[in-house]
Image (cartoon, rainbow, N blue to C red; front, side, top):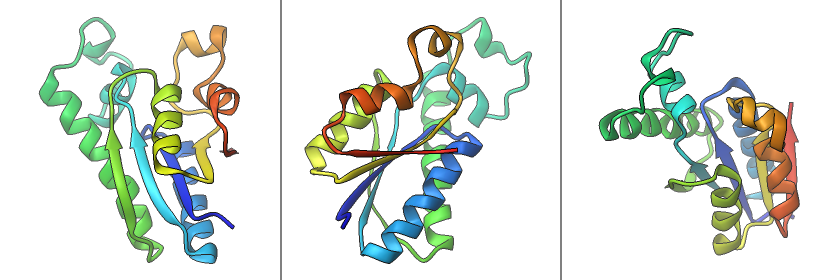
Length: 148
């Protein structure tokens, strides 16, 4: 039913739940899982153990911090898959708008399904413009699953 599943990760608990759902589906359908992470300042801060006073609120993270955070988030997704006995086929870490990058990856991979957490680490902008998950649903040509 689902040959390729793209999972958008941001390091949040809803993102982790989305990964677990993707693994369950991959186990049932023999699907390949493709992870996508698009580093954003708030995900970098969160992945590096941010508190409300973290300096990323006032300064941009360094390239080293971005890479460390992205690796941590992707590795956490791979660990969830490994715990479920599922192998991750591909990982993508791309800069830009998360919704656009996730949809672009899904289209280029020929994915049947995109899975994301319903409410991740989005910011105030998401309250005004809509969440990444909502935008994915509008932009995508494949099925989308939003995990609460």
